Length: 540
Image 1 (cartoon, rainbow, N blue to C red):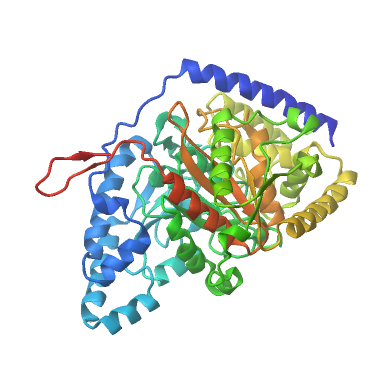
Image 2 (image 1 turned 90 degrees about the vertical axis):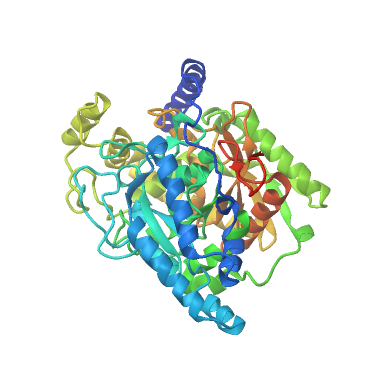
């Protein structure tokens, strides 16, 4: 345990607690000003829509038009879209409809949808994941105007399954923040409170899905970047097992660091837990056989471990977990207990050095480009980084302070002695082995995704000590799913993450599906108003 780091963590944690409480009372909640969902298609999951398309009960053009309209309704409030391709998407939808129409026999339709399991289904993509011809600036002023030369590999797999990308969504600068707020694009706002952040780095995807403007999105996660926006915006988000999905075509990336493919993973964000298995299998590509989705585990055979936080000194240097979040976990455990599933509280003393472990893991990453020089082999001098950090704080820099802070920490070696770094690397290996054995092929771990509901803008650095419970499972390479559990007393989404051993992603998704069935999953930020023919508008 590093005294300087822990002192720093202690100060930040209590500053964050104080700041969050003050801002909660000073800044009034701004209710969403976009209209409610009025079209029933926006409330149907992928699995139902694919069936409707196959049976000819719906056209892809109708579905794509409905989602385009919804994006146009919500984006002026959210600022989540970087660039769209609506015209091209409508042409691709018409092509999908022609393919379906030409397959006139039931046998031909089944064959068509076996080959293209997402035929005619619209989706959205985090800008950093790459859609050919669309913006590839990734929140950087210097990269403004850059276009992706090709689809990222995961995007390519989803398109090859017949799905239709609508747009690329907002990210922090170089994905180096858990607050999507850049000089290049401005603030991406939370659909439940427009004064608050949608999280990051998949903040645009979180916001669009939370507002019901995306059927599903592709995000990326290196330090909770799928799970945290999912938490803040009230939807499901899955970080796959390390190495399961390809990171080719993602920016930023590294050509020389072998650990990055474990830490960084692309995965789905969606309002519908029941869609996650299909989406994950498609995104996994040639690795989908490792998931063994066709070998379900009986619910009563699952073993649940859980914890609400860290004991002892480690707990003092971490932020206090909000009571609404703890209560969400209690509700889930009680529900599963009634189904005969036993749970056991896990002592997290073996994670006493979690700060140091995740810092060393990040510092060890090589070959990532600097936000200042835009190159991996030309790091800026320390004086320039400090100067830009100061300029950013006073609003006179092209770069964001969060990204500069991470660059500064890397230059300072994370304030950890080089002599001690191997000790922490070895400890990561021991923890990975211990948790792999503990969880096995039937065990899952419930933990808070984050200590707080959605944060106010410009507070992410104060709350950075709460991110290690997300980042740890990137470092370990374990799959993790955020599960929404309704709203807090102040009307903000709450939930928790469920973690499993490597390649046991299906256990996380099984728990997500059970929780969706029991607690309804996504709660809309504005009550629906679905118009039914010959009846008044229904509110529910």
